[in-house]
Image 1 (cartoon, one colour):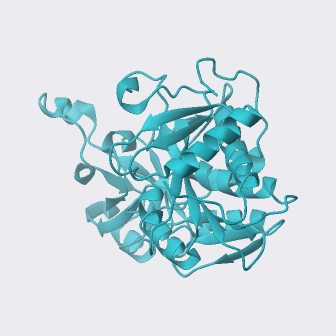
Image 2 (tube, rainbow, N blue to C red):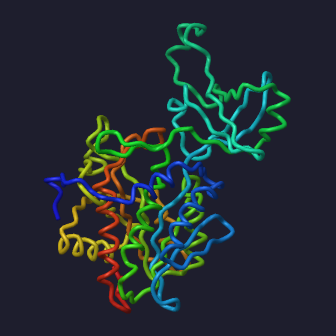
Length: 358
């Protein structure tokens, strides 16, 4: 239905599961911790397995049926140690798309082989900067991580290639959920919750939720898992920019405020057939949704899944998100629930041999 009047009623979601996912450090290429939480939850109601690339799978429905893939990536942006300098100060590279400004002053969890080590992001204090320096934005190469140890100790405990994430866990702020890694741990949460909602449904398809790996560096996990599943259709669940915040253009991103429900992508990479089916399901069940245009690729796992093998009809369902790729991303539980409900409602309506032609 139209989103002129966003929903206002509080939404109930499985917050314990979502917060457990958000607490885990799982940068691209090192998704193990989040994947383990996701798998434990999935094992309570579904058939579960994983692959060598870090993707985790949970399925319901006939084991020999045509597959419907629901993808939400579990990885987050992170850091990787590139050098240990004098004084034990650690240089890092970005894993995924960082705005270095959000790193300044943060605390970092390094996933060191012998156990996690906490440190702080260092930067020259404003007092010792020249006037011109104060005007410049921080660059990643000008920052460092200080773990309070000598160079020798750091070299022993933090080898090159050690991953790190910002040390910032989930919390409630008003009626919103705030955390690092909501992009896209919340998508991984939604695909599994949508599958859970189908557990008492007589499914005509094999429905597979996938917690994918390495989306933030190139949608690689979706390519691997999509090739393995060879689905007849799929959905990628990710976040999009919430447009009630200053500086986010509705002309570019559509009208996507908090409380407006599931955001559906419209464009050349997404399936118009699935879009129509989802809109019908949303209207029939009173699930709020918005539309956003995408002139080329979507920037999600759908870009890989759409092109796997002979091609997979794919939709993108997104959650409005503020402060993306920061330690304090923010989402609304009403929108999370709408995405979950819409995906489950769409699958319940699918017939055997469903036509996904454009």
